[in-house]
Length: 271
Image (cartoon, rainbow, N blue to C red; front, side, top):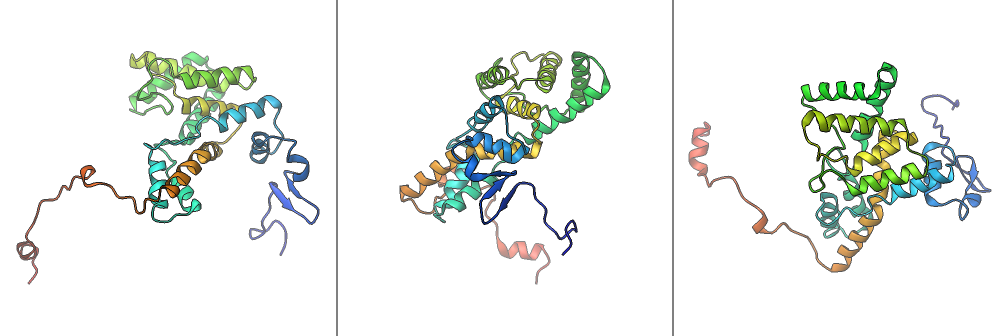
């Protein structure tokens, strides 16, 4: 088989040899115990070792979600699955599949920030002017801006403020973050909603855009952050001894009336 053909696999991520396992060219025996998990994660995804500040920011990103919470659909899915298939892999699979457009994943937010940021840079317009024009277009099209709003927090999301402070302290705050905040201010003003917060998912996405991660990689990192919480919920469920979790009748409303099959068949033309 010729190297470089469509059927030939090429990777720069890792190599297993008789001497060692190599991660992005570095021997694993040199990495383990020398470089923290957050830095190795950055190395694997971005291809280069991070600076100490980037590594500390990665540690914050990987610690920013941690637990789905029992009320979240991913946790319920994981626990329901292991109540009938008591295997850690089954529960993790169910929980991971619950991350998507409407829960957990910052992918859409990251794509929005990256796309609009690049468009602004190419336009040459002042930031505030471009942000106001973008918001006007979005509102005219009745499009929501991902990463804005929260069910509880008003004016300030304390989680976002903490992430922002750390990003600034670690030197990973930049133009992408400033752009997204300008869009947020423009949206608050245009919608007359000064209490509309920039939430934690939005702030995380902006920071990861600034750090160079793709939207798809952001989704993976968010899921990775939840794995410890999922493991703990799955373990707790399997140790509970409860089998086959069911939705109680008090939580179910049946919406179809009782019907007569004979008359229904006659009406449908059955003989």
